[in-house]
Image (cartoon, rainbow, N blue to C red):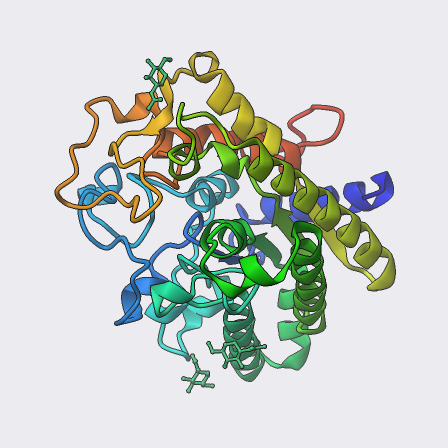
Length: 360
Ligand SMILES: *[C@@H]1O[C@H](CO)[C@@H](O)[C@H](O)[C@H]1NC(C)=O
Ligand SMILES: *[C@@H]1O[C@H](CO)[C@@H](O)[C@H](O)[C@H]1NC(C)=O
Ligand SMILES: *[C@@H]1O[C@H](CO)[C@@H](O)[C@H](O)[C@H]1NC(C)=O
C-alpha cells in the first residue's frame, strides 16, 4: 500500500474514533469476519457444529468466568481492539434478531473452523465459511437500508471498518490434512493460487456491498502452534508450514495493492502480524511470558487440541502464550492487539495522534 492511501485511511479512522466520544455524532461501526481467532459465539447457534467452545475452561478469565464461544480463556484480539476504540465488541450475527437495531453498530460474523474455501473445516459439520459470512453480511446491508434509507446506509457501510482474519484453517484444517482432497489435488503454489483468487473474489464482493476500509489480518507462524509442533519429534516449529504462510502473506499483500488501484476509493490494508507472533514465541520472556512451546491446557495433539472440561490447565495462565493447541491466551492476545493497534491506528510518525485516549 502506498503512503498517501495509508494516510487517508488513518485520517478517516481517526475522525471516526474521535467522533465516537461525542454524543450524537455517529460512532465507529465495525464488521468482523473470521475464524476461531475472532469468533465471539456464532457457532453456539449451530446445533451440529463440532467447532465450539461453549464449555469450561473456555472463558475462565472472561466476564463472570463464563464460556461464551470465544476460543480462548479471556478476550479475543477483536475484543481488545474494540476496547481500545472505545466501542462495544460487536455481537455474534446469529445472536441477533434479523431486524435488531444493534446491527447498525456493527456485527461479528466470525465462525470457528471457517476458511476462505467453502470446503475448509468440512469435518466440523457446521461452520460459517467466509462465503457464508459475506452472504449474511449482504443480508445485514439490506436490513440497514430498510431501516435508515439507501443513502445513510451507503454512508454507514462506506465509513465502517471491516476486520478480516481468514486463511489459518485453509491450511490447518484443510491443506495440512493429508486425507482431504485439496492436499492430494494441489501442489503448494497451486493451492495458494486457489486461495488467492477466491480471496480476490471475496474482497470484491465486500466492496460491491459497500465496504471500503478493510483490514486483512495476515497469518501468524502456524508451524509454531502446539498442534503443529506435536508433529515434530523434538517439538520444534515446522519450517515448511511457516514458509507456506510467508508465501500466503506476501501474495495477499500484492493482491491488496492491486485491488487498491482497481477498486475506486477502496482502502484495503494488510496487517502483517507474522513477526510479532513469532517474536512472542521465540522470546516469551521479553513480553512477560514463561512458556510458548506448549499450551496452558496441555493438549499438544494434532487431533482435538481443544481445552476440554477434563483438561488439566496450568496455574499461571498469563505466563503461557498458547491457551490450547491452536489459540493464543488472553495475555498473548493483549500483547498482539497492542502491536496491531499501534500499527493500524497510530500515525506513521509514531505520535499517538489517532488513539482515542490521546485526542485533542
Ligand atoms: C458453499 O457452501 C454452501 C453451503 O454451506 C453452499 O450453499 C454454496 O453453494 C457453496 N458455494 C460454493 C461456491 O461451493
Ligand atoms: C436475512 O434477513 C431476513 C430479513 O430481511 C431474515 O428473515 C432472514 O432470516 C435472514 N437470513 C439469515 C440467514 O439470517
Ligand atoms: C519447552 O521448552 C522447555 C525449555 O525452554 C523444555 O524444557 C520443554 O521440554 C519444552 N516443552 C515441549 C513440550 O517441548
